Image (cartoon, rainbow, N blue to C red):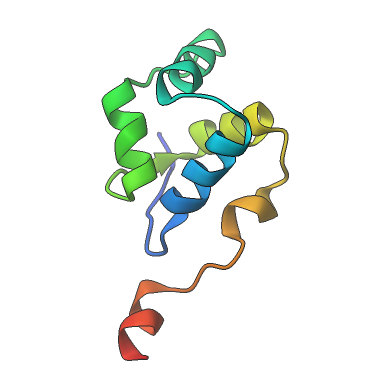
Length: 87
């Protein structure tokens, strides 16, 4: 059974920020993920950054390793989208 994380908060913007801090392109991230056995296309990775793709737990773990960060880095300064809409 494939486990996915549904993005009800915008993780994508933080993932994009971490990628850029690592000085990597989307293509480079995808290539490195594929070398780790993660089957993902550049299009799917782009959707992760846009928040329109439910990221798999295995992808999430691989990204943390790739960016050399702990999981808290993915959740910095985030709010639930429902909370943001009420403000």
